[in-house]
Amino acid sequence: MNPLAPFVDLLAPRDCLGCEAPSDQPGALLCRACTVEQPLLPRSFAAPSPLAWAMGLGPYQGPLGALVRTGKYRPDPRVFDQLARWMQIAFRDRLPRADAVVAVPVPARRRLRRGFDQGQLLAHALAGALNLPLLPALTRARAAEQAGRFGRARSAGARGSFRARGVLPPRLILVDDVCTTGATASACGDELLAHGARSVGFVCVAAAAL
Ligand SMILES: [Zn+2]
View 1: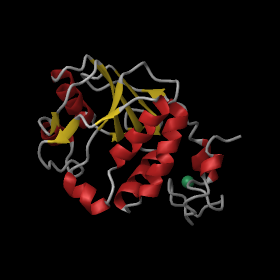
View 2: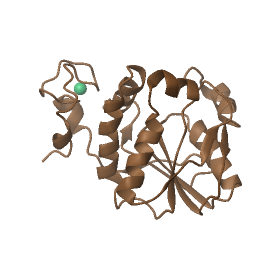
View 3: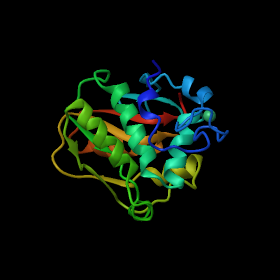
View 4: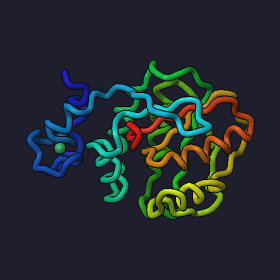
């Protein structure tokens, strides 16, 4: 059975959210072609320094990346409910041991505009599946707008954007919806390691490096 099958009937979009073609699976998030491209297996990619390891579900350039963008820019939290379930299935029992989960926080302005924080949603679901605490260990230091920046400017913008707080256990799993340049994950990893964590792994839905 296709692992996506139990979760395809909640959103009922008319078009595939991955490729925007008319849906050939009534009630499904993705069309058949996009669905078979999603094996829902955790896949490793080159961890942005200083992270210990990095895993995602699929390429940012593929249907999963399109799903994330649809969820963010529409915006529609139900997309992230679905992605969270897929993460639970894919990553349960398949990640290195850890002590706690931490979400990459979205800028407060975006959270207010969207009405939800997708990183928090995904991290909460993953923490539940792994039976680990979700720590509110990171905050935004300033409202650096990441989405409109590229390359070097974006890298510089990410550094110093996050602040760690609280007492951190040694092994953390950092969660975000996507990983494009890796600058955000790196900046979060730097901050967590500077505040007592000894190892930070990273999990996302879609990564440009996959
Ligand atoms: Zn499609």
